[in-house]
Image (cartoon, rainbow, N blue to C red; front, side):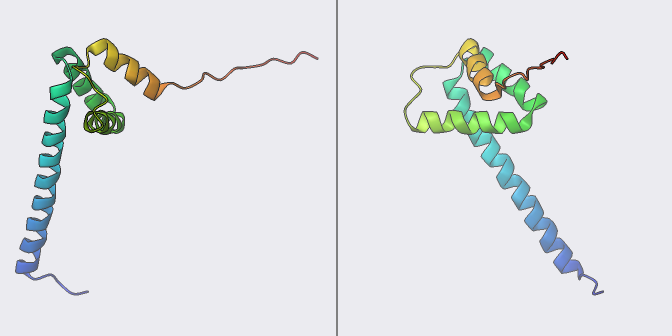
Length: 102
């Protein structure tokens, strides 16, 4: 097993820090773009979704950015409209239970 040299460890740390910084900057850019298209109440709700379910938040932000780039957003999205979008994204048909009597 070869040991890493101190210079190699420092390079690896630098790369990791750069990747984290790039990811943080990309997240900030996404948030600033989305913030332009949401009312303050809708933005607050989006941040709550971010805390509760990051995967859903990411999907929603990507969808909002795609809609904005495709010019499918006119004006700002309010909290009720955002709730409707969230409802459509998370809708699952409830399973039915059937009882068969003999």
